[in-house]
Image 1 (cartoon, helix red, strand yellow):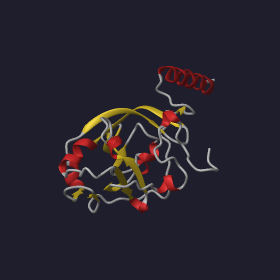
Image 2 (tube, rainbow, N blue to C red):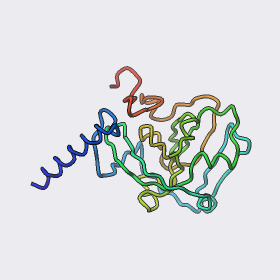
Image 3 (spheres, helix red, strand yellow):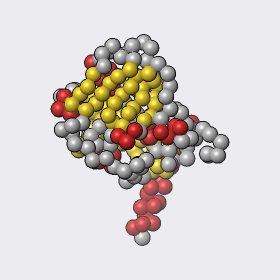
Image 4 (cartoon, helix red, strand yellow):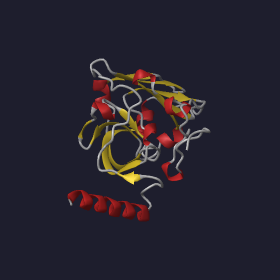
Length: 208
């Protein structure tokens, strides 16, 4: 009986979210936090971790874990939507606001795209104007706690208005590029931009 009641409650909540305009088409509500990985979960030692910024910037820079933690942070509450069709609502994240972060090294006018570089060579691309939105973070806490390894420890990007693969886990570098550079999933057939409300899931023949 409890399973039936939970199912009915979830369906009712989904309907309300659709009516409010918060639920993108083709998505389903989850209260869990599914783990989606393209490879093994890295084991990161923060003593040797660093974040590198390079490319079309005035000053290429690096941050150790201690230096990164010293940066001002903000907390945001956002909805996230995975291309595999689950959506999780009112998630709470803490981290460095991206548009404040770039003030530390000055981005050149020639920079049009931000390429996130992560462990195991994973990359993903986001237009720079999207990274400047009010709720885009370099996040290192979820729900008041440090990120779990399976969710991107120690730092990930958070770009909640795009499908969640654009929020890159296990961040190591941010490349500011004058040209677009599609990453791992984009080269595998995922959409180059990934707007959940337009269902921009896939872009090559053979995908749907």
